[in-house]
Image (cartoon, rainbow, N blue to C red; front, top):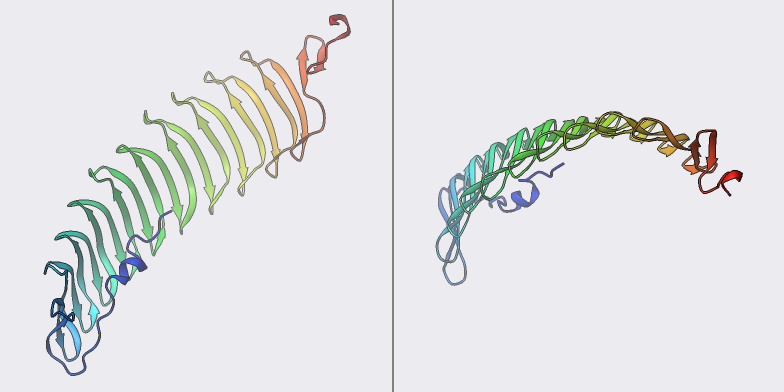
Length: 283
């Protein structure tokens, strides 16, 4: 559902520092004009302690902590003096909380374990309202994700090992389900149900391994059946029947492999007639 928010692009900002064999002390990197670009503590030739990178005006743009040459501890990135990213490392791998800020407001938080997302990824708007919560396990979405609109849940998605497995539920602005779509191993599988704004069932679909299979039914808000559509291998196959608000049949038409095999028939008092054709006594 979402890429690693602190993945390769983020890592590139913190390229490994060069070894300085045998050197212990503070190393400084400067440009041709003598402006300080970076200052790093070394012990026995390896970065050990704090390393800071600087903007031309002298403000810190990056602060990292090293142990035996590897990132170890919080790594921070700044823009115009403001903290924009902070990620925890352990022995060179992302491990622990990672955060991103916008104008001082937390807009993203993630948890890592041995360089893999492991925990809940949280996204927020600039005003702090939630946008997304997405749990992970060993680098993959795993558990129930929640998508928000104006701070209210808009969709619920169940993940297992990185794919949808369980319900995908959309929610109306009034907090009631609009659709419930079951999934197994990333594909729609089971009975999908759709609802109106008042929460009344208005449609049912039968899915097998990502394809419509079986009866699809449509209802009025009061529960009256108004349409039946049989599917096989994702195509209409069988007799489509329509009903009026009193559950009385009005039309029917037969299909095979998605194509009609006969005319649409209207139900009359005396049986069925082809739509558009009048009986002899009506001519």
